[in-house]
Image: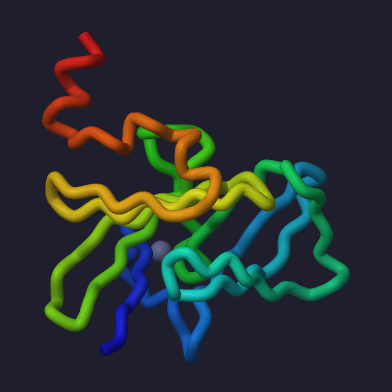
Length: 137
Ligand SMILES: [Zn+2]
């Protein structure tokens, strides 16, 4: 079984081989390519050693194809991409843009699957969109 990852804006494929490729910008406005694992819960990353950032630094993630920032209105610290599984079902994937923070959420319709040791930080993901809109009144 193989999952694809696409940009929510241009729907271009972000996964090449066994990595998802992002254009990333650090707080010093330096850009680099960051390669992440397509396995949810695996936080291995690959980058050039000249591209540096520190633990806890917020990084800006961009689609390397269309250049659109991969942010979401849900939380300024979350990145948003779309995963398509082998059944052709689309899942919204959110993960933290804070370096070293391990929190990933797979949202499929009303269902949320949280992964990572820091996933408790964004607790509103434990409820569905439908309930969240009532809480925001
Ligand atoms: Zn794109």
